[in-house]
Length: 554
Image (cartoon, rainbow, N blue to C red; front, side):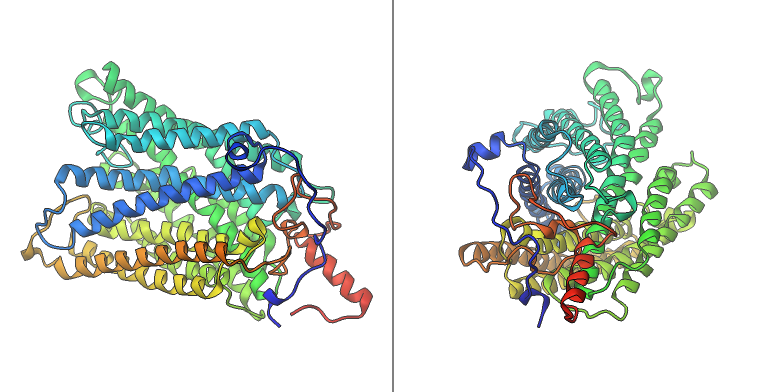
């Protein structure tokens, strides 16, 4: 019997009826963390689709040498907005959306600590996103200076359009929403845990969201300040980062990367948490080395605050040995996590449902991204590859492993909890394999292109540079990835039109979100099992099995 064929008796009660707004009015006015979480998820997935379309246009431009599918200016807009949407408007907000829905359930709370602030955070994110993307509809087009907006190239003489100003304002507003959300997560985890749930009994996903929120509180204000100063240079002539006015351009890079390197882990840690929730359930084993995983997460967060100049080796203004050593060191706690993930599966009763496939895919893809990251921690190697497609490949291996593979794993894992239905397993497995193939066909050639010296951010290359075949393979891979995304949309449509009901606990989960109905009632719980460890539902079932003299579920 597979885990999907079994059902737990916990949480089988009927959800209480709740009178109030429904439909669009409910979405507009609700302060329920579940509605807000779903709003984040849906909005971020729409932005992810927009970003994906931009990526396909980029790859189509590079399909042939000296191609003129798009202009140089529009190409600059494409890679700027693709990166901006992914880094600012999808990666973090999607994770915070899952966290909004799941974290209160995992700690046995009825809602977030500040429900109205939670709603405000979402609306700031939505309006900020709309403002950012609206630059495409201005006369000068969208922002075109890269998602990092380096000064002085982002100043008015080089980027004079209105779209750039909208970019700063939109990202700033969305960033404010992130800061307020982070405040809410920290307060919720500290104050609303159920009786018996100490910090050392919290689920790993909740731990990771907690640490991610602290990082966001430390670095998003710095990013906001850097953007505000750059915007002041643009519209007020403040000359903070312009040499002609006595400013220091490289100071912007220090401010930006003080945000930018922790941001990589703000993007990664929630998805590490998702994988750590999935692996035990589909291995039928507890998390291996629970405290080691938590301490590794804390170590990653601490070290990430000190390695920002890893991204500035080629500027000549940073101490290379110090930041190189720290960049190597931060790989150690990540390696500990890998051993713990493998240890969780080792000797387990593995079942390969879609969430498990995506979690294993994450391990394989992220491993290669981590290896190339360690290579870039060496200054001599970084000097030769910094401005090439090798960095593009490394960055995408890291971020697609986390946000796409682990993210879809989380969607397939928690979709039954959110809706009471399964996503179609067959379509889910097909999506995984097509995505896994497309991912590697797209980005492995870019490692080779980078080692051959192909520069990033360029719209054209020439036949004599011998880049054509690898670029064509990479572009075909990008089209394969788009097929996997279309499969997900089909899966969602089919599963919604022909639902397969899941029951309250279809995976036989071990954390508290599975102790209530699917979807949960307005205040989440009518009762909770006693909490004696980080796997309260498994403890509860084990006690029941012993009392009845039955064998454990397999």
